[in-house]
Length: 222
Image (tube, rainbow, N blue to C red):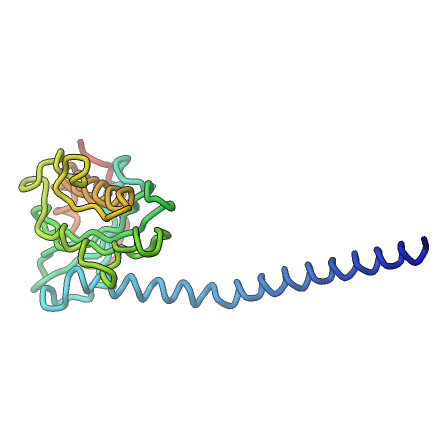
């Protein structure tokens, strides 16, 4: 009996040490890779900015020309909205807004939406998602050109009711076997356009007044 108890104790100690070592290894690995992951995310975001508004369209430092715009309950993000501003000869020609599609198949989908000053989409890029490989991941430009379907769209040339996938009466393609992902992104882009329409004048004034990162306390106009 004593031998059995001793064996059980040894096994318990061994399992305890294994758990401690494993947990410590995971913690150290996460600490070492956290900065690297953040750096890679920042690089991906910067690359997406220049895909949406290429260098030929602006002559300012797009990465540093950042303003904050009015907060809105229409957008899933809380607080003031960050925007990168593209300028040509000192005049704003467009901007890029980060937004989130909260109803993706596997959770939040983060994307960037580029707009000109009339509220027309210059481009859309997905920067982060956890959608199903081979299905929902076709929102990535390296997998398909689906997101290019937003270019030159606006609430003027595409009425709000048409901002949906074709399966639901809209004009945007869905993916075979995956409707939730494209539907979520279409909704997020539409919401961004509605936000711009309701804050058009405040946004234009903000872009004209600023040429770098500042903070605005403006509230949304209805």
